[in-house]
Amino acid sequence: MKLFKYHIIILIVCAIATIATFGQQSKKTDKIKSQAKESVLKVAANYGKYNFTLKTLDGKTIKLSDYAGKVVLVNIWAPWCGPCKMETPGFVRLYEKYHPKGFEIIGVAVQTNESDVRTFMEKYKMRWQIGIKDEIAKAYGTYGIPDSYLFRPDGTLVKEFVGYASEDALEPLIKEALKFIEKK
Image (cartoon, rainbow, N blue to C red; front, side, top):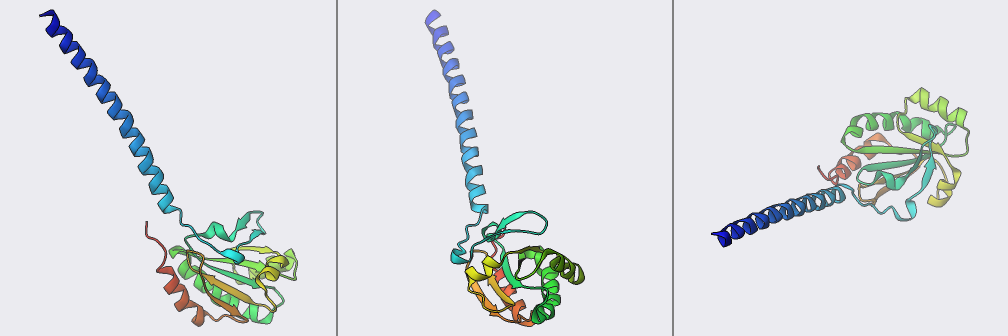
C-alpha cells in the first residue's frame, strides 16, 4: 500500500510539473505569435535614394521611411512659385479625401523662409507635414519647382511630376497605389 501511495504522489508531482511546463510553453508560444504578428504589421519599404530626413515646422524630425505602408506624395515647392499655388488646392482636396485611407503628403519647401511657408500653409489650409530643406531638392535632382514624387506603400516610385501636378492626373494614381496597402 505504501508503494502505491508513493506512485500516486509521484504521478501527482509529474502531472503538476507537466502542467507548469505546458503553461510556460504556452506563454512562450503566445509571445512568439505576438512578435510575428507585429512584424507582419510593420511594412517594409525601400525608398532607396529618395529617403530623407526632414525637420518639420512643428519641430518633428521625420524620415520618408517613417511612412512605409502608406501612399506618399513628396512635394518640393516654394510659396513664391506660381504653379505651386495652382496645384495646392487640388493637393488639399486629395489629402482630405484619401488621407483616411492611407495617403500622406510631405511638403519640402525650398528657397524660402519659415514665415512665408506658414502664411502659405494657413492660406491653403495645408494639414500635412512640411519642412524647409534645399538639400532634399538637390538630392532628388530637382531643377525646377514644383517637383512631386508619388510612392507606393513599399517605397516604389509610381511617378515623378516635373512641374505642375494636376489633381486629375494624381487621383487615379493615388487610387491605384492605395490598393497596395495591406489590410489589417
